Amino acid sequence: MAAVSGCAAPFAGPKAASFLPRKSPNAPSSAAYSGFRIGPRAPVYVGTRRGALRRSPRCEAGADLVEERTASRASSVSVLEQFKISADRYMKERSSIAVIGLSVHTAPVEMREKLAVPEAQWPRAIEELCSLNHIEEAAVLSTCNRMEIYVVALSWHRGIREVTEWMAKTSGVPVSELRQHLFMLRDSDATRHLFEVSAGLDSLVLGEGQILAQVKQVVRVGQGSRGLGKNIDRMFKDAITAGKRVRSETNISSGAVSVSSAAVELALMKLPKSHLPSARMLVIGAGKMGKLVIKHLAAKGCKRIMVVNRSVEKVDAIREEMKGVEIIYKPFTDMLSSAAEADVVFTSTASEAPLFLKEHVEALPPVSNAIGGVRFFIDISVPRNIGSCVSDLECARVYNVDDLKEVVEANKEDRLRKAMEAKAIITQELKRFEAWRDSLETVPTIKKLRSYADRIKASELEKCLQKIGDDVLTKKMRKAIEELSSGIVNKLLHGPLQHLRCDGSDSRTLDETLENMHALNRMFSLDTEKAILEQKIKAKENLLSLSLTSATISRNGDPHMVFSYREMVKGFLSSL
Image (cartoon, rainbow, N blue to C red; front, side, top):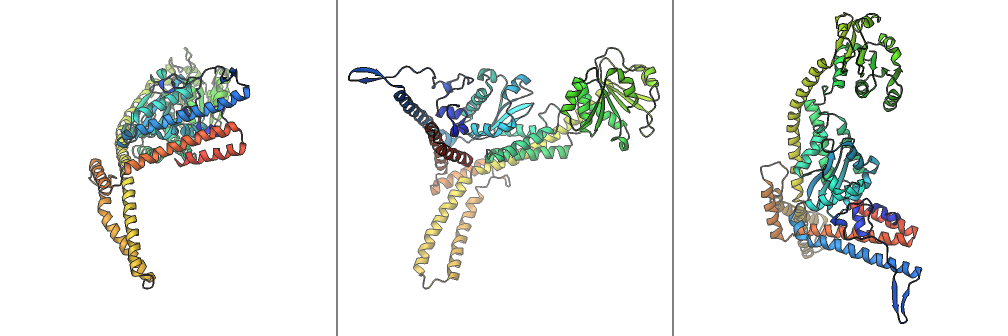
């Protein structure tokens, strides 16, 4: 799209490629792009009375532009005609909510990295997805553990195909390879998945809280860019509600489920609560496990941590990542002197020989009586870094991995029990969302019926007022007559509108409500389905027209017109 400047930027997605025949070198070679064969143009010749003459570069450039415009319009008309040909199916088929994506459960980190969308690019991604032919609404949830796209699709199969091809194009990963890692869910399954993600049930650590904040951020970014439609917006907000309820009503996020978090939790359990902020922490080893211990200590409010490691580079990296915590580096040669200044010692090194023996610990100065006069050694290394003989000392308490496993397993069982409670809460929230979405089915009929009744009321009211005459009609009489006519209309509409309700507040099923809706459509010739379809086709026509005009203006190079059309396109996209 680099060849089209200015106004072409908002149409940088795959749909724009269908309007303006451009093919990205990274785009997958699928049937969706088979109509555009990009290659070197052969010399153009023009027939004249004297034979074939080669065009001048200027004439050729002008002809090329005409041909490109013609080809663009032809492809645009083709897209629109396909949409109109499918009209009957769209009138019968309800738009589907779908999620297409991959997560830590389905794809390795190398694949997730290729498809990750930075938060700053979420608005543009939403804009590109919404410009696809069969996508009405879209949202992007991209974290270190997952990349998921939520859409409302006019057609399930075509919408999935378009989103999959968009993912392949933006990531450079072929569709065939991408499909090996993707999962796809539809309607209630897609909604339930988002609710479970928000509640932390789909996370590596059951009930972790960071994902809820990330789901909230999707809503904030989407609303800021006005890219979320009513269905996706409501679904994400209900997912946030479900996530909050699960955490507050089940307390699922409490309890350690990893060795490192269990080590920290155990240490905090053993220390007097009044001295937790002032307790001196020492971590020996800055590898993966040591880093996790430091992170968990920081999460529990520890502001100063001493770290012993063979090299300073790993400690510097941790310090850079956790700027809110004072991390003090000590070399391995200072291990014993550092332990003398600590109340709790965590060990997590690959040393095959014990780092602390009985004589080492005996030589350490006693800890404060406020702490209990006992120094805690929490050994999460295999082989163990603390000699078994240290347990014989009264001034020391030693815990190893086997001790921690009991804490972890106990917490896992507790979390699994809470997960069952969480799923019950999610089912309640899912029913509320589905009832709300079902109620949308009848909104066009309600509006059309109300409009039809108001037109009749206005017409008959005007006839009545003309018969009475202005010379007899007072303001009080006019007001009374208008209120009378409105009251009659409202009373007559009350029954039919009640039978169009489907919000879960009564026992009426969706099928019954839809039967009532279709009956009213037939009786009053409301034709709501046709009106909705015509509105969608008109929106696509406007989008096609704007994209073609923007490309033409950009090529002509008038900066004022380019700016005007760019603003027009932005306004139109925001109104969809």
